[in-house]
Each structure stands twice: as structure tokens, then as C-alpha cells.
Amino acid sequence: MNREMGSWLDSHVNLESLGLPPGTSRRQVAPTLERIEALLALLGSPHVEFPAIHITGTNGKTSTALLVSELLSEEGLSVGTYTSPHLESINERIRWNTTPISDAALDDLLQRIATVEEFLISPPSYFEILTAAAFTFFADIAVDVAVIEVGLGGRWDATNVVNAPVAVITNINIDHVEYLGPTRTEIAEEKSGIITAGKTLVLGETDPSLTEIFSRRKPKKIITCDQNFGVTSNLPAMGGRLLNIFTPTTLYPEVFLSLHGSHQGDNASIALCATEEFFGRPVNEDVVAAVFGQARSPGRLEVVGHQPLVVLDGAHNVSGALALRSSLNEEFAAAPTILVIGLLGEKDPTEMLSALGVLDVKLLICCCPPSPRAMPASELAAAAAALGLDKSNISIVDDVLAAVKSAQDQAEATDQIIVTGSLYVVGEARGSFGDSH
Image (cartoon, rainbow, N blue to C red; front, top):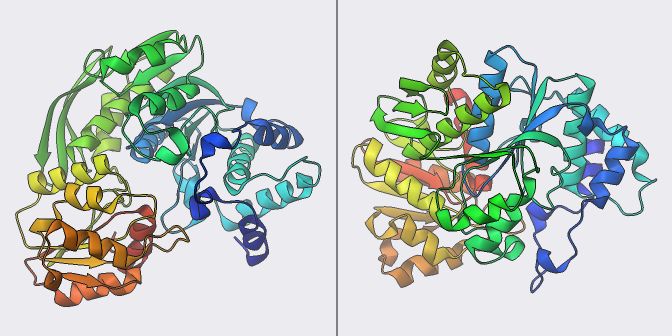
């Protein structure tokens, strides 16, 4: 993206970077789809030109979206993919057959949106602009299907204008309470908003107390994890997982998935089921083997270095942190751990550090995500000390890259370095490892 269009885009309200003013809640500011609908109308309603698989949930959305896209593409379809946030480049958010959009194409789309902006009653947000750009791109290249990840929640998310014969909800956990509410019930209500009456819901959430919330949206059918699809065996293997997956139509035995973490096995089963529901038939087993066998999910339990082992994981909530800790214990040899972590200001540092098992680390290096919403590293360090971690084992290095280098400088070859706490931290750190990933 050229500097002029980048500056224009950055001039718009960006809740990803700035969040909400202190003391306010998104639930207080009249959420609406009116801006995105008006913008898309000026662009020729590109969102009606393709069917979509629409994905929301607390964790696992991006990994699931990328797996679905790969399966569809390997089956021979032209596939658009829209995910957020990005790790290193904004182009990552908009993909065609898994290849990020070019700078030239993105600049052209942004210029077209800038041209029509003056006709809007109120200016669109940063995310609404990128959503409109993605949908316009997909219409221009005439994709057969788009895989769309919700930005936040579901009901009022800018993506919630697409025609989605298949909706996916990966799971429901506590996160973004300032936007979605403080309980799992309220969060489920918001995320259920992507379900279209008469269409299919693939539901990864297994809590029966939430089922009625999804049923009220009147989907034609609900395909439920552990009942209609799921994983009957999910074992660690060299370089990933070995899975037995079942769907409403098929058993896929001994499928190798080249991703770490048992939760990625769950994501794979959701992705496979959603793809089947879109096609209305099983997915070719050779396609499943090819896609899952070379799957990548950048910044999610991603190994980018050895001796010492370096793992990047964008765990940004308690459930993600617990999954990271469990995966490290299950799949990697026990080793002294140097934890590099930075959090956004709305997170509870005590909860996050406890979930990560901070009292067991060799060294904690606290840094600041490259975001105006960053929690001061000193606040994170204070929370670790209050939990009982010896202050001699706590270091404050505000800059992410400097923090990673400090970890590498102090690590023995047999140690492990874990970089986590925010996708902003992981994205910044990832660039320093060049082509190693």
C-alpha cells in the first residue's frame, strides 16, 4: 500500500488500535450496519455477488478460516478469504486462493472507496473500509465463495451483510467484555447474530446451556461438535497432530495436521465439517490429507527457531493462554522457559499470567505491544511480582524486538522462548525471524 492511501486509511476511526474512550462501552454507542450498507451500495453491492462461509467465535477463527479456504481451493474453487487482524502486513487480511492481495490492487480499492466516501452521511471506520475493499475485490475477481472471519462479535460486525449459507461459531469464552458483555450468555447472543434463518450453523461450542440462544436464530439445521462431528482421536505427532475426524457423512481416519495444539485438531474438524456443509458432500480424502498435511497458521503455536526453541503464539485471552500452556506441556519437551509477553490495556494481567503458569518460568520479559492500547510493561511486571515471581526473574524491555533479542541473548540452547500475549506482539516479533517461518 502506498503512503498516501495508507495515511488516508489511518485517518479513520480504528477501534483495533485505539479502542473505546475510558468509561464507555461499545454497547452504549448504538451499533449499526448502516454505514457499511451505505458504503457497499455506493460500490455496487459487491457483497451479494458471492456466497460465504461466515466464521465467528472467541478463539480459533483465523486458523479455521485458513483451513476452510485451503480445502475449498484444493477442491478447485476460486476462494476469497477475509481475516483480521493482520500480523505483519495489512495485505494478509484479503486473500485470493490463500495469496495476499497485491499492494497495487489494494491501493486501487482504497482509492475507489475514497472517491465515494464524500457521499456518505458519516465516515466509515478503518475496519468497514477494509471490509468493503475485500468484498469489492472478491466481486471483481468473481470468486466462487468467500470465507469471512468476523472482526468482533457478530450481530453488528461490518461483515454481517454477506449471504452465508453456512455460519460457523468456533466457541464461546470470555473476551472483549467492553464490547460484547461480561457473560458467556451475552457473548453468545452477539455471536449468534451471524446465523441466518433457514441456513446451516456449524457449532463448535459444546455447552448445552447456550444451545437455545443459537436455536432462536432459526437455522435450518445445527451441526454440533461431539454430536454430529468432531475428533475421536487427537494425539501429538512429529510436527503436529494425528487425528481421527468424523463428520455427518464420513470418518476421516489418521489425518496428519501440521499444526501444534489439540485445539487445532478441533479447528480442523470444524473447518472440514463447514466445507462439507457448503458442498453438500464429503471432501475428497486426498484433498484433506494434502491440505491438513501442509497447513500453516502464522502466529499460532508457530515454531520459528531451534536451540533455543522459539514459539510464537498470539494468545490474547485466558482461554487462549490455557490452551498455549497445555499444548507446550503436551507437545514439547520440558525445558526452562523464558516468557516474552505484552498485553493490551483491557486485559487482566493477573489472570493472563496465572493461566500461562508464570511462577514456573526461568525469566519473564515484559514488553509493550506496538499499539496505543498497550498495557505498560511495568504494570505487567508488577502483576507478576504480586503473584509471587521473584523480581530477579522479571525484566522490563518495552520494545518487542529488543525484548525478543534480550531473551535470545540470555537463553541457553536447551531453553525455550515463548512470545505471546497479543497478536500485535507476535506480529512484531515474527518479522525479526526472516524466512525461518
